[in-house]
Length: 524
Image (cartoon, rainbow, N blue to C red; front, side):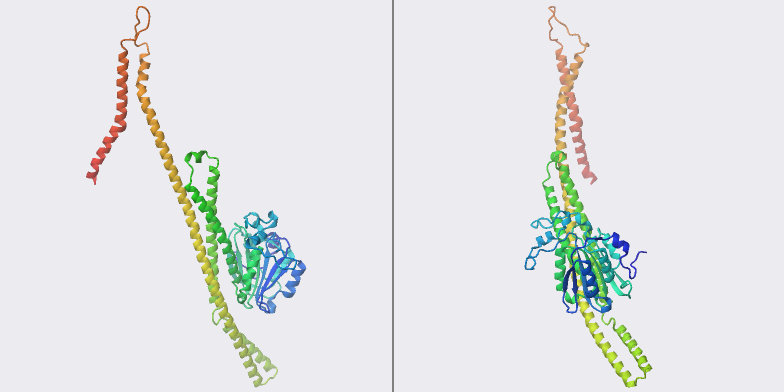
């Protein structure tokens, strides 16, 4: 089976085929360094990346803790304009979003209109703002797991995955690590991908965020400035990722709900059947309604899928609380480690002929250091449990909000289906009324036909040679004295025709109805 393997970096095939490279300026964030402050710096050239990775990036051997995050800027992002004195230009949110739009797709949209959706950014998360060699060095230094290539390629489905593995540099030792991968769907603009490798024995986190727009970059830095105490918690960045995705989804849901409500209200103003059948824009109007319904259904399915991923994330906070940060966790291993160290020290002292007093002093010192480390570790675990509870509570609140949005989507979709059914029912009523009017017209025509039919028929009969009409001696035509026969027979035939029609259509039907009404009380 294709399960995650230990110490599996990004393969050379994935480096060349999955990712694209357009070197640009990229921001690196270090949180929890020596000064316990956030360090934000831009890097652009291969030489700058190489120097930073070799000299300033924390390594597994340095016993450093904290968080190191690379915000891989989205393709087409340009720098925020600055004034001559070096101060950043103050811009509002709409201008920031407009500046974050990819330049390669025709430039940024009008800032007054905000972000214009586009299908251009489909591969933005796969296009990296540094060269192939730089990303290879980053993946080795940050111990990135190869599964991120598959997560980035799987762009149409939101994903949160976590696995516990042994990770480390290609030529170095391995350590227990948690690997997290997050991916948002690219069905809408500004999709993101995140990979995190956390080493719990150091409290050190390496992470790369793919496809990061400028306004998201600023938001993440702002959030990290307020989370310095949580720099060593594994789910800090996945939690921020969930917040970013929530912000994106809320805006999308509100826009979709407004559009679908507009379509529902349009159904209340349905034109007559004749205009629907022969109107020039009837087909386009129906196509827009179908597209809106399909889009809203797809959005609801996407929210349900991402909500399931958030549930997995929330459950993982409980797992960390019960395993990695449980009270007393690591205390036994610390005692065993101290005992082993003490035993080796005793053997070494005996080998060199040290006296008993020196051995006892060494024993006391080892136990004192073990007690101090145990107290510090317990305090740290307590702090991590508190942070985990905060993240878990926030995730549960986001999940509840998603459930509310899912219910809103379901209500709008069902409302549109119901409004469509009502509209079809009203249309059917109009068709039935029109059919009734046509049937009344046909009845009038039938009555007129029945009135003239006997006369027409008899006139045809009398026009034949069957009758001998006489003329006078002068040769002028005269009206036959037998014309009354035609009139009499015509009137009688007409009356018989109308009487038969009335008998079979009305009187007989009325008699049957009266009989059924008389028999109904007997049956009951």
